[in-house]
Image 1 (cartoon, helix red, strand yellow):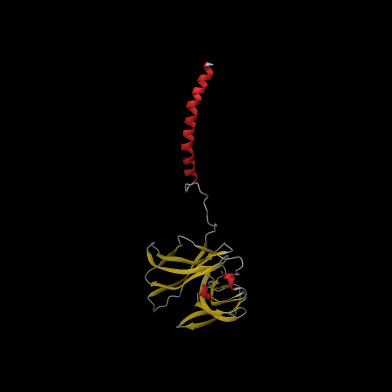
Image 2: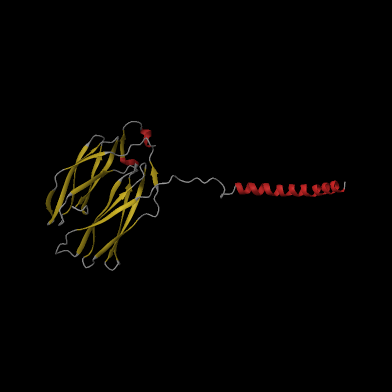
Length: 264
């Protein structure tokens, strides 16, 4: 009987304590569940970064009467994301001399289409003749803001035919002229279509670069274009030309074939 009385006394003491602990524990648990650290985190769809595969510097022939050195710079960029691109992609080219001192800096804003290989070009970069170019440092954007295209939106599609190259004189300087024909084989009419091209030597190095704009190009329409760059000492083995258009600019779409809601 003594044991039963002691057990009852202990129960009268322990149960209220457990109830008090429970009353304090429940709000604490709720606060923990509702804290920002415990809520489900919504992470954005991961995209692979833009890859700058190659940067080439092409010197222009130095004229005896000129006090400037002039170069063309081209960066080959690859977007591995098939359905997402960049409406704005700015590369910063820092030209350094042989002592690693800065000569000049130029920036070029571009766009990058989904799943594409494109060329970002800066033409006719000049600096004093007494400076010797050592290398070009390229600074990429600190943040890449991708725009995902709906699955119903077709990417631009072009066919391109290169004509025979010619040589001519411009201002006493020999230049190479590369002509061609570009055709809009896609499903959208574009207000502004551009073509960039690189000339390669036998080892695949870039020895010339040019760009031009062909303007408005409707579906099924074709237009001639011409690119030119200073003639170098190396022999051109191949020219790669890439037609493109900025799909991220709404005003660039002239007319939609089919449902206008496809771009929304």
